[in-house]
Image (cartoon, rainbow, N blue to C red; front, side, top):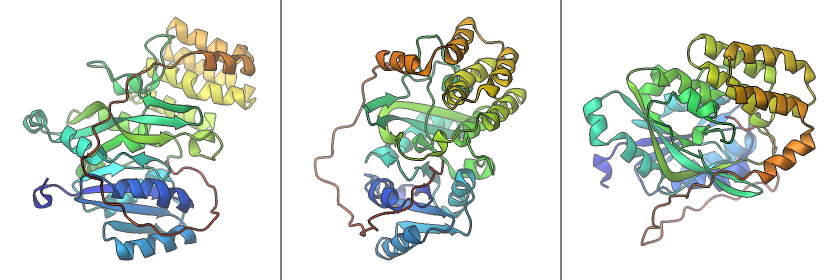
Length: 352
């Protein structure tokens, strides 16, 4: 692929006080892409001397690295928006600072958004890749299935089709979109949680936006139960307000709202002993008019002891979908040298 004929792609990485993960995982994976016409915009979200020093030194040796330093901690939505505004690329790929791109990631996404059929249709294409969910128990291909034809994305991400299924949410690190779309429809400023889901719900209803999903794995999402992340510090009341607002605006169906309550809010509140959540969540369920099996899930979450639920969850097999990976290149990719980091760094929340 000739660079002068290829569009510039900007990889936007928001980060906050995690230089070890940034410099040893996410940033190296972005710089090791098979697609070479790229820049990596690293948005340091607030005071972070270790990360600032490491990035400043690396940027002196690698012009593809473009640090953006925010004076105060703004949160994931505003950090990503700042990265998009600073980016020079036609296309934007997002990567969280503790996640990883596989080497073919950008090429795969670019192929998805520049096909002949999309050229004829026009509009704003958005590519979503499959990814590995990596936990201490191993890797799982996510999402477990691709969307059905005509299936609303809110239903796809948040709801199950049946009691035996799993949800199909996806991470920001799987999303690739045009800079013009992201400038016209940025992440919602100040939103602490559901940042990627909120953005997808808002743009998916626009007639000019077309989502393209791939079953080829192109990223790794690290879900570490021992490390503090925003997804681990969910406040059910804030997230309930968000899904109620999304439902009222017509962005999330009743099916999606019931799925979100059962998939995220009830398990969190129950595991933290927040029994005051039962009535507000039950009222929201009634507003959603859920299917019978969703009421069964709600009763199961609140009525069955947590150790029993955990045991049943471990015994329940996740759906197995082959991890489609391209053949490795015939010649090894060049390796970029990275700077040594401090032996210890602060542990903070995941930005996105």
